[in-house]
Image 1: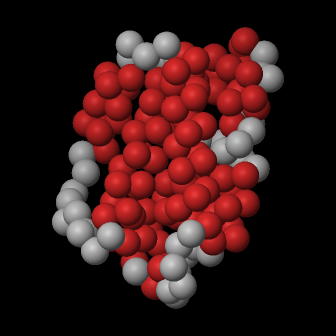
Image 2 (image 1 turned 60 degrees about the horizontal axis):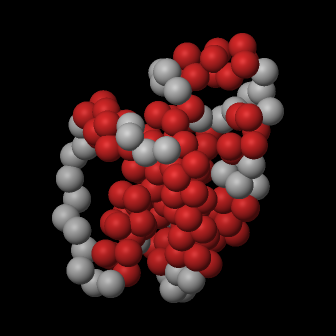
Image 3 (image 1 turned 180 degrees about the horizontal axis):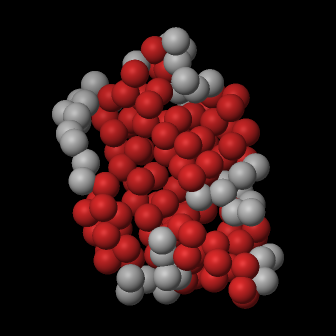
Length: 143
């Protein structure tokens, strides 16, 4: 049985992720620092880099499956992947990264809205979308 539904993914993308940056910005400076410390990042920029790198990976993999040119599964060294994400975006301007975050969120919205019937029966599609949209927001929930 699939973990995800289009409706759930769309709702999370349209609510939690759509408000993510604003929710962070509305925290006091001390609450922002405490949140980032709990998340293991020194800057919000680095946390966003981590998020967008996983979204890029998700889009690449799910699209490859739908295009019948599936990228083989692989094991991820999570720490190395996250470090590479932070390094890849370290020289980006904050505004550019925020635009990229929003563009990827929109791309995920379109991908989910346009999924063919039965797409969630493919475990890789289901697992990637659920992990990168639902679970990732739970892991990085701004409270």
